[in-house]
Image: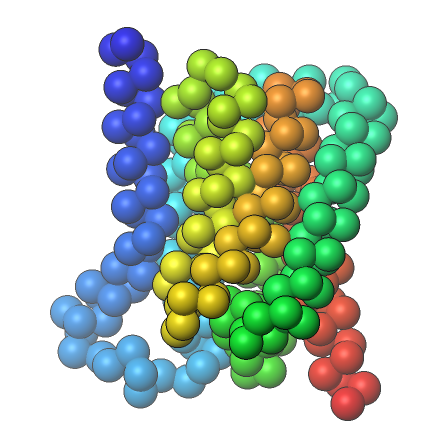
Length: 230
């Protein structure tokens, strides 16, 4: 019980830091009396990346022993873990794609607001957003929602469902405009559950980190290419 409460407390702290990580640069800017909105968009994005790097550093320090152990295990069993991760990602990707199509065709909302925000950011600073979305976001989100949050649960099947739900909710709740927007918890949650299931099968955090990185990297790169072609 004590161990569970300890893990819950750690997750809550990391989750709050994750939500308010922009304070890492907003507080210094406030002290220097510099308005964030007055800065160039590339500078704003760089500051956001810096805040994510600080949080990543904190997480690495906290989980340094586990990360070292799991990375050694990941290298040792790479072929097996990659195959397992690929299957989980493929299932999550198919479920996400089908649910996205159904929601966009049978509801008044034709695109997730979170996705629209990302596309707008890509137009402003494609290279910097690519770095943030493809490398920093997967590491932070997997360590938070699959490792820190996942450690709370003794029942790993419950962990898979809870992790997927929280992951989906977080990608929707801050950009909701109508109740219909909540439907997009389903596709995001399906992908999150697929990543969580890869840990259930392998007990290695680097498996979902790898495929979350591939997922975000491929989709972000495609968005950049399509914007250039247009």
